[in-house]
Length: 122
Image (cartoon, rainbow, N blue to C red; front, side, top):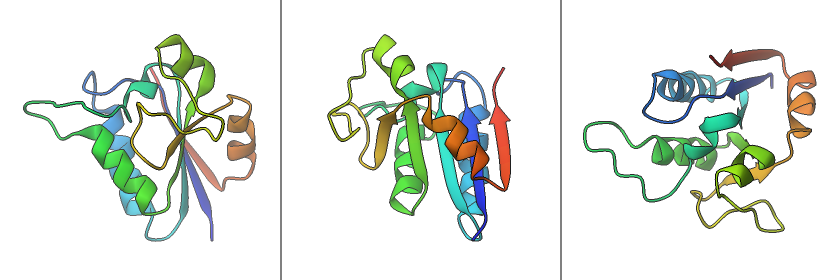
């Protein structure tokens, strides 16, 4: 099975990037293995407890992708700088289940093992 990697740097509810990444990944999961790497403010997306009044809850949408098989990783340095701490296994009490914090050094591996890469960064 081919692999698609999506790199996302924008935070939730500030632009359409997170929702666009979700829609691409949602469609791709039918035919591809999907990786999503959350960088910079995108590490806020999987935070539990967000309650947007008029928007879809992007954290829950990304948790659904992870439950369906997408590999979603958040940059450890970016997450730590924003107050999200990883347990030994990469999970975080602040994050939805299935989404882990990992090293930025995992990103080159994701890219090199992918058949296609989409970068949603400003």
